[in-house]
Length: 311
Ligand code: NAP
Image 1: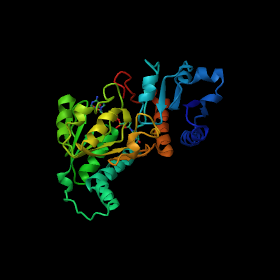
Image 2: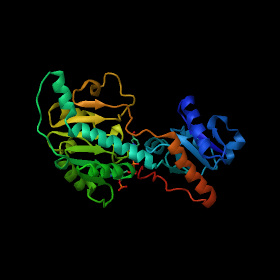
Image 3: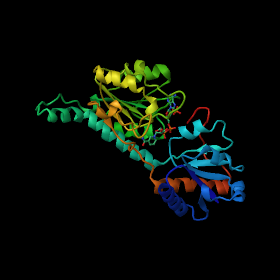
Image 4: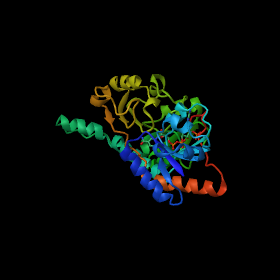
């Protein structure tokens, strides 16, 4: 018996319960709210989607939890020193979906779509200088499950791609940087910056005024990671003074984005409602099921989040 622990709506939980039960026919997947006190004592695994920390802490035998989401900053922040391992979703389908979004919105910026939309609104017929894909330098922050596949897809589409991570990396055809000096070098040579970093103590407000100012004049930013990685005021200042030309934002410090937030009306900001790479319940349930089935046979917990590192 495995509880599904979530603060999602009842309708959303019902979808997950169905797909998880289909993928795990030998297990009984139950909503946390239906567990008896006796059942709570027996749970060694929980499947979670934005769980209430108190619910998890009420399961004394819990060895590990499997998140159905890739980003785990909330659970990591809410439970200091968790007495169980936290396993997050790593789904090749999600990486492909994210790389598609990265490519789509990079093309949007690369082919000057915001400028042509503005020109149409002004009934202005003005061809802009054509930049070839190989002349467009894309910097990808984060070379993990999502960043690696996105960098590769950009490279396959002819762009000049560089990436940045915490530890050194080698990626075919992608210039790899790491550490603070590496970040400044990468920023200085990124016409389009794509953020795919997890939100941690180190990445919170990483893209502040100083670092965003290292981008070349006219550069653009795509944030598909977490809103708090960027300092909103710094971004607005650099868009307003013309240092940056456009920002495509899928994630925000508060979601949904507050009505009245300056991003909504800003002519140089594209607001997306956190849609760049939604978890796909069928594919995610299969990944979760494979990890749980393996644990039942080997007793090995899949590679887990490091609560100190935060990802
Ligand atoms: P991941 O596999 O854990 O990769 C994280 C990458 O960031 C790694 O390359 C890591 O470096 C790097 N990194 C972490 N901290 C760093 C630091 N302080 N300095 C430099 N690099 C650092 O994560 P992922 O699966 O690619 O997902 C990334 C994030 O995307 C998630 O955490 C989530 O917030 C977000 N996301 C958004 C959506 C959406 O729809 N908008 C969907 C899914 C996920 P190392 O390689 O050296 O460890």
